[in-house]
Structures are given as C-alpha cells and as structure tokens.
Length: 353
Ligand SMILES: C[S@@+](CC[C@H](N)C(=O)[O-])C[C@H]1O[C@@H](n2cnc3c(N)ncnc32)[C@H](O)[C@@H]1O
Ligand code: SF4
Ligand code: SF4
Image 1 (cartoon, protein in one colour):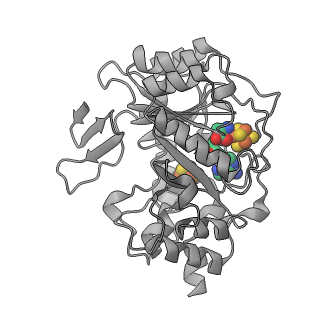
Image 2 (cartoon, helix red, strand yellow; image 1 turned 180 degrees about the vertical axis):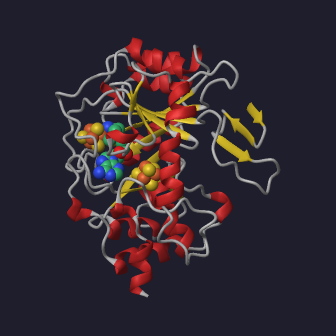
C-alpha cells in the first residue's frame, strides 16, 4: 500500500487491486488538486498497423516510437524528491504491443520506478513473452472492442478473455460510445454480450471524441438513443461490472442514479497528466490546443505541474461551468470538457425532456 499524506490532500492506493482513495482535511472534503499527479497517461508510440477509422491519434505505420531512454526520462521526471512517483501509468499509443521495447518498458516501470503499469491494446498482438511480463508487472490491461472494430470476433474476444483469466491478468473491455455504437452499447447493458465477456473484469465505456480520423458526424447527437442508454445504465440487466471515462461523468451525474461518491469528474491536469511520444506534456491525451502543451526537453515536469498548468486550471475553473448554474450537481462536477464542445451532453438530454 502506498500512502501520500500532505496538508489538505490524502491519498491511498492499493497496488494489488488498483483501488485508490482520496480525501481532503477530513473525509467530507475533496482536494482541489494533487500536489503531484496520481496517474500519468503515456503514449509510447504513434505507430499502429490497424488503421481504425475512428483513431483519435491518427496512428499509422509512419508513427514514431518513444525511445526507451526517453521513456525512462519521463518516469524520472514523474518522480518528485518529496512526493515520490505517480502511482500508476496508463500506457497507450499507437499500439503498445508493437513497440520494440514494450517488455522492457513494462519491467522498468514496476521494478526500477515502483510504478504500476497498465496498458490499452487492440488485443491482437499478444505473445507468450508479453503475456508473462503483463502478468508479472501490470495492474490490468484494457482490450479495445466495439462495433468500429473487426479485429476480433465475439468468439475470439471470448477466448482472449479466457486466456487472460488463465494467465491471471485482470482485463477490462474499452468500448467507445458514439452515435453509431450507442444502440449496441445499450444491448451490452441489457446483457446480450454477457456470455462472451464473462472472463473480463468490467466494461468501460469511453466517449467518442471527434478528432484525428474520427469524424464529427459520429458524435452522440440523438437525445432518444442517449436517453435509452442512460435508462439502461440505471437498470442494467448485464452481470458485468460497468464503468465510464471522465468525459461521460457530467451526464451520469445529472441524469442517472449513479452514486456521486463513486465517480470522479474529469481529473486531467488536477490529478492526472498526459505525456506523448515526443515528450509533450498536456492535461489530457485529447488536448487539442498548443496553449496547454509543454515539452519535457524545455521545462521540467515539476515546473509544468506546479506552475505552468495553473493557467489551464484557471481556464477550467472560470469557463467550464458557465452553462451549469441551474444544475443540482454543480458542486460535484467540473463542467464541460475544455477541449470538445461536442462532449457536453447535458443539454441534449435536458432538451429532449
Ligand atoms: C488510441 S488507442 C491506443 C491503444 C491501442 N492501440 C488500442 O486501440 O487499444 C487508445 C484508446 O482510445 C480509443 N479511441 C480511439 N479513437 C477514439 C476516439 N475517436 N474517441 C474516443 N476514444 C477513442 C481506443 O478504442 C482505445 O481504447
Ligand atoms: S485505435 Fe488503437 S488499434 Fe486502432 S488505429 Fe488507433 S492506435 Fe491502432
Ligand atoms: S479534458 Fe475533456 S476529453 Fe479529456 S478526460 Fe476531461 S472531459 Fe474527457
């Protein structure tokens, strides 16, 4: 168990389960931000051979790999002399399993820096070696699977789930919800896929972002499809555990019975941070402006986290809740996404009622 206690901020993380708890001066208080991030999202490449039509990173065969030395520099930068390191890194890409140094990246993260690595993959490139490394060092893996993808059939996904279970690797499904996948996602909540997914730990729904190869036309825009999905969230027939990314939290808070204490509004730049394969640091992997992007070759991570990112935090505090004054959940929510207006769904459902 790792503990980090500072004035106004307490944090406990359990490496075995991935459970994290955070509170302020007492349990009724929520800290404004962490003195040092709890999680870093790191893209170790922008290389991929899958060519998914919705890839927000635009990853392809020309994509760059982050050199191993740069990766180690990032972990070094993420370690503070007093606060220690981040608790976990979420490794993405590109396709992480195609990075030539993937196994060493995972090993060094845990063994040399004491950080728990997790990663997201399309699930096609497992080998006995990377499975062994994953079992030994990773907290969990996420397998991306949704109707956009044709890389794994349901039967193949089911077999992969069983393999990962046998290997004692905790695996979640990452499922992107957009206008065109929302209906299928509702079927998932209604239990139609349970038979295939029983070996997985949970399904996490990720909100579609219209950037990279992802077209704006497929952002969620149908109030009725969204409402049906939200109704299914409130009364799921699936036996699977379900979760959501931070981007979907405002609409969950506003319209469902989901327990506020169990969900965190967007933590980017306040409790978590993103680093890309070129060592650019920004609040979130979906940050679409140079304004909040800083390079580790020019500034230290400490300076970026403790000083430079304050302009982003001020922006969020001042601008993101401008439409939220009538909302009962305003105190629990960080408001609309600072990068994509399309992710603001609260209006959509309210309009439809
Ligand atoms: C860019 S991929 C990189 C990791 C790996 N190649 C994979 O596909 O899982 C990381 C995650 O982003 C999701 N993703 C891709 N494009 C997206 C988009 N336009 N909006 C939201 N999530 C997206 C993927 O489904 C995946 O779960
Ligand atoms: S979403 Fe993942 S698998 Fe698909 S092209 Fe992008 S990086 Fe590759
Ligand atoms: S900054 Fe926007 S895209 Fe990033 S996690 Fe927060 S709500 Fe989602």
